[in-house]
Length: 332
Image (cartoon, rainbow, N blue to C red):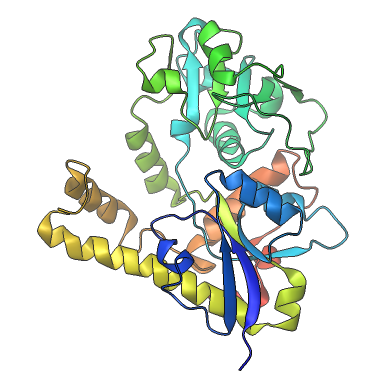
């Protein structure tokens, strides 16, 4: 039987590494795997049509939907997810002590207006603290290195929201330390903070407790990325969606089984002290399958992101999980 050749892009996480190393087969597929130290390079390749399947930033995926017909559909696979209260940093000069104080302030944002952590955190700020994007001024750029505008992806900005790009030689971390911006919303932690800076800090110093409380109240474990596939591939080879889903699940489940098994040995193969205590706490909070794939286990989180994306003017249409995932996997 001939196997379908597919170019598949993504980051080599611990829960995708065996797949990318060729240790987990994909039924009926002859894969060529593409990775990069910068996941945005994979996104750009997907946007440029160089990949057939790829881990893709959720907002990048959705921006392709404001076309007559998106060239992509989603598989309910979420390689990257993080709670994002930890992504907000403030200058000590700003006078910001609580989330509500962000109103009227200038906030830096990594890469583009509406990167995935930005969509999540702006939505949470609006839902829980009453701070909406139009109440702030926004400066887009790189956190510790200057980056140009990502001109390979649509960058809509709704009327009434003040957005500008940082000067080409400026970094948002430097602007935060100097007080030129009041806060920073970034997937990257500023190196100055990691190196002990006393001029910047996290808005939520005890972010693990805040994020666990958020999960207890909402049941939402935010996802940053989804796996996307070209629509014509699914149309011509409908069985490939399930084969890809099963392979990604096999790798993720293998890793979860490993961590459960290693609990009896106090995770002696992990270099992080007190990892076993963190593992047990996360298992208690998030359950036995703490990194779920599939539509139903993720429907609330996905639909929340889709609502935020629409409310922030990044999607013209309010979509739901039933719209974006390939129909053959809606039963997952």
